[in-house]
Amino acid sequence: MQFQKILVVGLGQLGLPAAKYVKEKGFEVFGFDASLEAVDRAERLGGIKRAHDFRDYDAYIICISTHAHDDMFSPNIEGVLSIADSISKEAKRDGALVSIESTVPKGTSEKVFEILRHRLHVVHAPHRWYALEEKEHGVNQLRVIGGVCDCCLREGMRFYDRQSVEDNNNNNNSYSNNTTSTIHKMATIEPSLNTKMVTYRKSLEIPMHPVSRIEIAETTKIVENAHRYLQIAFAEELYLYCQANNISFPELRDALNTKWNVNILEPREGIGGHCLPKDTKMFLESSNSIRSRILTAARGVDQNYRTFRASLNHRPRVEESNNG
Image (tube, rainbow, N blue to C red; front, side, top):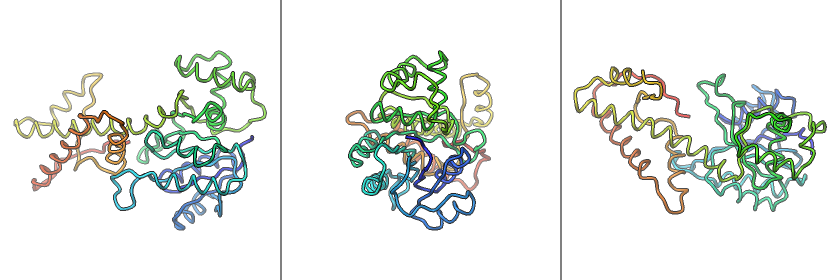
């Protein structure tokens, strides 16, 4: 299948930049969003065509929020599953690609694959896009990708990062051993990957790190944000320590950050935005047995810090933190 006609589902903070990027790469791009205002904005600012159904597309990119409607700090994947159901009922092209870029807990992609009745290929390519530093951390930065099965990963790589597959098959050693093994396995399944894929001329040209199981791809994003949550919570706790022991936090932080492998962040009013709290909660709830004690404690630290800040009559000078 050639990728020509692409539907981006969700045209918000992530979806609109993604749709604009896909259009810049020469694809025919349509957009869908429950908000007519978001669709109008995408049409006006990005030249994204308005989609009226889910029928006739080569690839579907899902970029919708995964928080509860009534609580932005709590995870909810019902929207992703609802979109998958609509695609399953309307999609005409067997073998089309469904890429989930939304942040989801492990097992979600398999559920989507089941809803699609195995008719479409499913990959998860979690975004690492950061609005405040879009030039450095935009749509086309290095990302992870996993497929529900090998043929799904193959199609996903063709769409996102065809050149890397070709380069690897030409003895480029830029991948880790596990990644190289994954791509060689793909090449065994699809011999055309061992030669220049002339038929598949266009891709998004995004560097991708393929993984052997889709659960790994699903887990990467929530762990990345949980790790950032921990970094900020430690800075908050260190700030509280300094307040209790009459130590200058700014001076201590500057001194600590002279070491090459230390990067103490600057705490603000608390761990802000909705992604970090929501995704940390998603990670905590995703485990079958082990529940992270350190993350549970970090949530308590953030609450203590917020309580302390609320008791102050002034706010310390802060600088922007990258909350992922």
